[in-house]
Image (cartoon, rainbow, N blue to C red; front, side, top):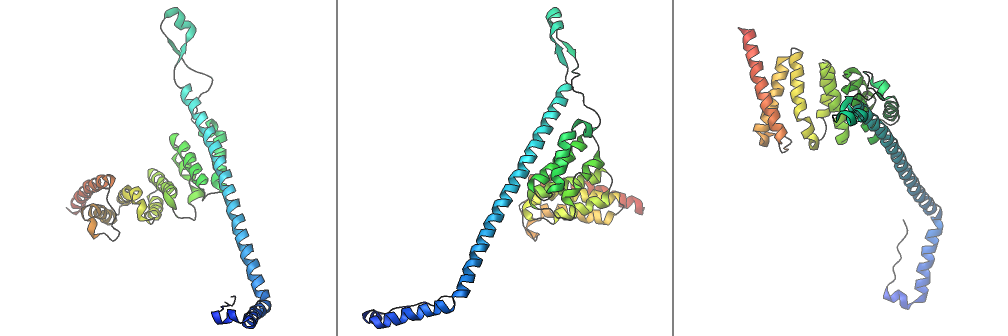
Length: 285
């Protein structure tokens, strides 16, 4: 630290005192010049390094987003062609003769049962993004698109696998990350892989309370999975937790406002809880 030099009115009237103070300050600076210079160089270096890092990161994010938009454009264009191909077309020559439009198929583009054939280019682009940058916004969006392509063709196993690169060894981060984990858990449950689905959903339930609206129905699905796994006690506990959260919000540790979706889920939980109790009574009788 530099030494602060102060001059009183008395000092200012005495030039020798001013010169003495200035000399003292100069001598201190000279004695500590190496430390001061080192500090200044370090400060400039760190500031420059942070500026370069921020610039490179911004440029990287922009390049990733550009790649995603190109992949999205390619996919949407192909999907439109395939959807249009399935619509009947009007034979204009026959229409002129009969005055009634004749419907004929468009044979230019035909959809197949294999999405890897229909969307080969965008699938590769989406997959490259998820593997190259799994934690980026572009990578997460690419994974969701890739998963949805397979889901629409009822290839649930491949749809779940498409989300693996962006969920492996990680936790949900932000709204987009939470949506990815929720989608993966839903697909695992649809594949009757309840233990894996519950594990995925539990990670989702550890997110911030601001994302509670995304997880309200996840607990219900977890309870249904526990029933499938013949774990009625765990299912019953979750049903009661869902119902209690809506009926007694003031008693919750994290007091978040319940939504219309929470209330709908709570009513569903009440229905499944009644059914579960009936099943328990039947087993006991």
